[in-house]
Image (tube, rainbow, N blue to C red; front, side, top):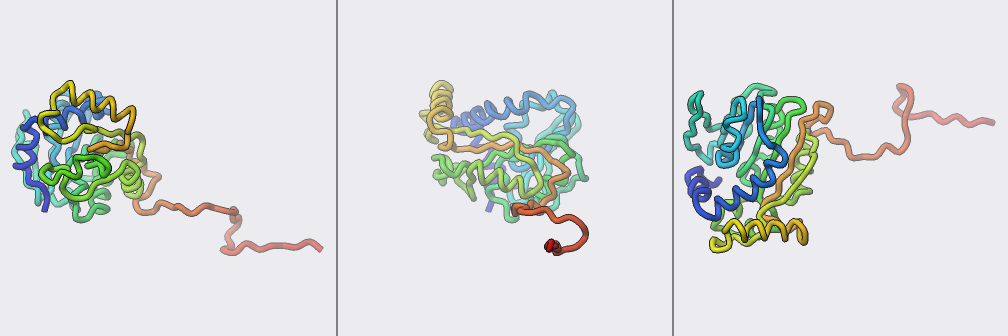
Length: 245
């Protein structure tokens, strides 16, 4: 079962949740300073993260997995939230310039199918950012927190998943290097842990983040890994070898 939207809303209203959002946004805004003129999709529980872009974006849609449920968020155009099947998103092809996933991949029943759907609704050369629980950090081991639910990832694993779905990974980052303890969630301590972790132990992060681009020449599920040892010319399947006498 997925974490419910109500529980996630309560988490982000608490000190640990506010600190987690701040540390993740610190990395996200370096990739996306603004979303001026963009149509953006947030899949999973992304409202706390996309709130900062509401003024600059052309349109933001918040899509929650059906098992997670949704909380009605409104914009000047009306309700901007919806509930959808993760393997069949209710959007047309190439509908979004930017896609953000948070609390989405960890508990997906069909992770390859979800990533294929996200690839479908992303515009060519559009960008996706996935924020997921880091398998090496302390936050994935806290069963009482949302980041302790479902599967966790390393940056290498997340990049591999995106690549297999047809995205071209560009950059990765980490966040939440401090322990998930409320009394250590103050801004000064949190930033101190971040600077120390990024410098001394970059792999020991509670969250991993990867940005990728939708490239049409990378076909989903058709990534070839075998090396070409010798080129074959002509239409014959088997090369012929002529021996000179």
